[in-house]
Length: 142
Image (cartoon, rainbow, N blue to C red; front, side, top):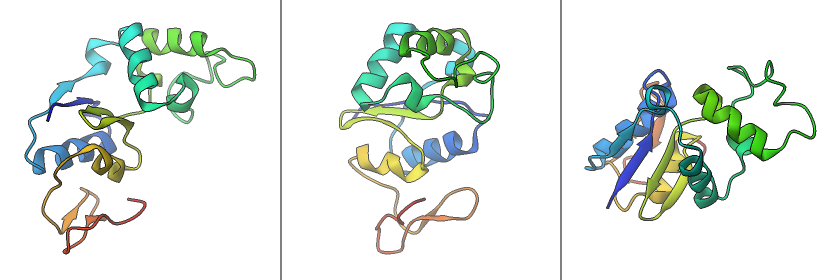
């Protein structure tokens, strides 16, 4: 199975999702979009595959979305997408693409939906929260 993670190593959730992928035995293609930037068409394709709009993956709390006026009513998806290309930090992360689909992996456990195999349980996030229990079942909401 091909696995690609659009990753920001400064983000704990992104690091946790990468840990899950690697612990499951995959060697993912890692795209560090904060360094490489986004290609508009590729980002649009990822969002379409995931069934998400640019507004769905826009970071509202941190980053320049507010200063750029992107949180206001009536802002178009095209404008948001253009600003995501100009300011990659606006995009929520991580986004993971596999043969089983594409997801914004927030919460971290969302990545399990698109992996054929999982890490052996029990498996915890780096913050100690259990992600997969001793029976190999996902813990809801993590």
